[in-house]
Length: 85
Image (cartoon, rainbow, N blue to C red; front, side):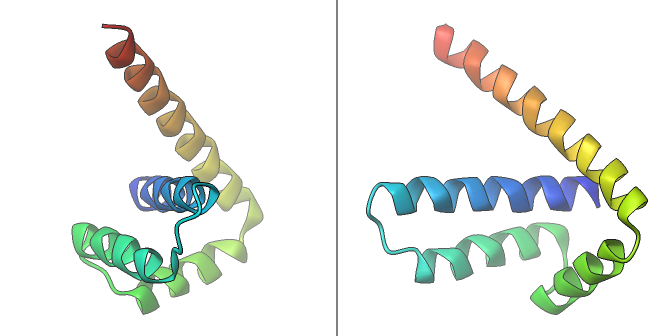
């Protein structure tokens, strides 16, 4: 779940960036999420069911998102190193 939710946050971040640049994201959103679903071998329905399930257990969701934040921080650090090179 951590990798899936991390990718979902990356998708949302990319969409937010595009939106701030003035891009209409309606079609992009579907495309980006479809790539994510394919990568993880799931459907949008399975994703929604998983989100609904984990939302019923806030303590578990918090643990998952703690790991998601750690993954995102690690990714950000790696990106910063690459841009410095």
